[in-house]
Every structure is written in structure tokens, then in C-alpha cells.
Image 1 (cartoon, rainbow, N blue to C red):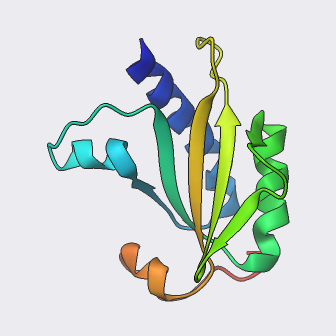
Image 2 (image 1 turned 135 degrees about the vertical axis):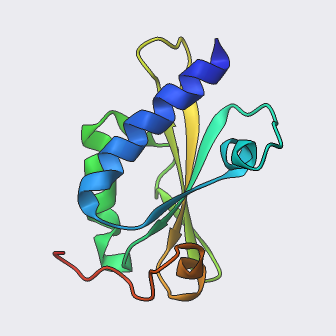
Image 3 (image 1 turned 60 degrees about the vertical axis):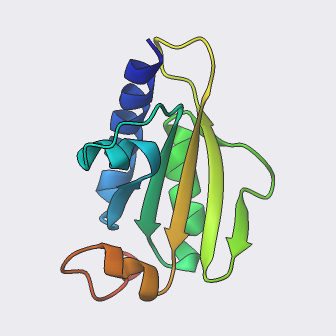
Length: 124
């Protein structure tokens, strides 16, 4: 079932990002379900708060978990945000699922994270 593959991908990606200690928020179709607005979705959208210099560490961690960039270079700049599109194929799926990471490298997008008023510092 496609929905289960998306949730499996979300769990895998979340567990991969968690050790970085950066704030992460669910976005997109999956986040709408928390507000009881169900919408079919075939991808995972996350907001991640890290410093620009930590992008390579983030990508290394994702690659090690079989989550690969969709294009080269992997990040596209959108104003003060970086968008990284990735592909991940859950073990039970036959096709790769898209993962969109909206990387917040400034304080403004981090207002989405309650209690977070600073960016994680390199090495924390």
C-alpha cells in the first residue's frame, strides 16, 4: 500500500536525522493529517533547521541511510531556504519515494519550532 510506504520512509528519514540534534518539522500532506485534513500524498516533506556549513554532514548521513539526492548539486536556493530533493526506496516498495527537505539556515523559518530561538551550533 503506498500510504504505508510513505510512513515507512518518514520513520526511516526521521530516525536518520534525529542524531544530528537539529530541529525537524513535518510539512506537506502528512502534516495536514494531524489537522484532520486528509490528502493523498506520495512523498515526505520536512523542514530541517541546520547551519549552511552542516549541509554536507546532513547529506553524508542521508546517503549512508540509502537516501540519495535526486540531482547534482543536491541543494537549490529559494531565498533564505535551501531545498534538497531526495529519493528513498523503502524495502517494501518497488519505486523510490521523493523526500523534500526544506533546510532553514536562518532564524525566521525556525519560528516553526516551538521553543527554538537559535540555530544549532556546529558540533552540537
